[in-house]
Amino acid sequence: MQQQNPANHQQEALTLPKVGVLLVNLGTPDGTDYWPMRRYLAQFLSDRRVIEWPRAIWLPILYGIVLSKRPKSSGAMYDRIWNKELNESPLRTFTRSQSDKLAASLKDYDNVVVDWAMRYGQPSIEDAVDRLMDQGCERIVMFPLYPQYSATTTATVNDDFFKALMKKRFMPAVRIVPSYEKETVYIEALAQSIESHIAGLDYEPEVILASYHGIPKSYAEKGDPYPQQCLETSRLLRARLGMDENKFRTTFQSRFGPEEWLQPYTDDTVEKLAKEGVKTMAVLNPGFVVDCLETVDEIGHEAAEEFVEAGGDKFTHIPCLNDSDEGMKVIEAMVRRELQGWV
Image 1 (cartoon, rainbow, N blue to C red):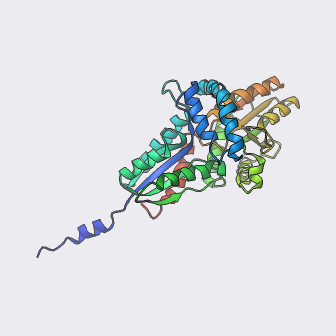
Image 2 (tube, rainbow, N blue to C red):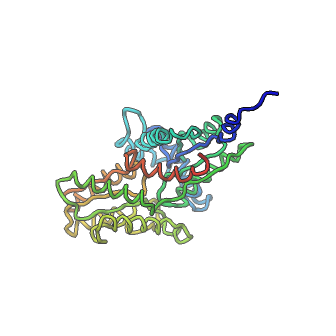
Image 3 (cartoon, rainbow, N blue to C red):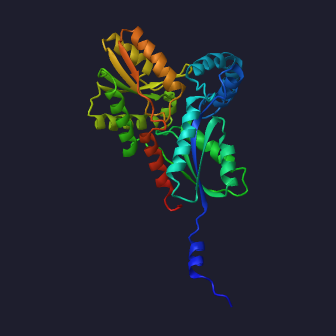
């Protein structure tokens, strides 16, 4: 009888199942013309997590008014930030790069496969799940790319992810990367990005605004932890930078519709401070993992114009962490933690 090689038997026992790592960001239209914008906005604004109004009230407004006018105006704004070379939005460019760089940093794990997706638009979460499972992934670490949790962002990514899994006969084991609003690696990365950016200026900003995407106040009153998590990020970042609440402030942007949203509003604050005599200002967006319409255009273009028109002199937008070395350290740290025991 032929004896088995004990070394081969041990090697078989140590073989681990393939693990997929899926990075998911908010989403992007496929183009800036009317129909690509309409498709994207229709998917986004029909999400029950995003707009909680009764369907009988909201859908006639969405399809009768919003989708007849907003695609054109939003398309013009997207056109200002569009990556003309790749014919895509910066959000798609940076998210793809983050996936590629994460895959390279995890190459020491033979059983890990990295992919990326968008909650709205392409590539879809369902397609990404299919790709991972086609490669034999029996386990998936899904990473909603939002430092602070909100039902309007993190939860709806989770919804769509599990909806894709509901169609599978075999469902992989799953881990979801939680919010990381107070993780040291994240706070340090933000602080370094601020210090590096300001060091390159020929002036010291009198005020720094940490501008987060807003949500309706009613959502917070129902229990969404988002505002508290944003304030915690700002508190820790302010302490790390050694600044007080007059120098480093928190605001909320991008409100939509007639409801009251989280305050203070970024645009109102920018105008108010300029009128009060503040001449130099910097704004960063700690709630956005990559630069997008709300950061590059709404802050870097619109808020800058508002500041100067109201009497300000110098305004700078501090870029998001994007696929920088500091930004990738954050993503890698969160993913490696969730991979423990699976690699």
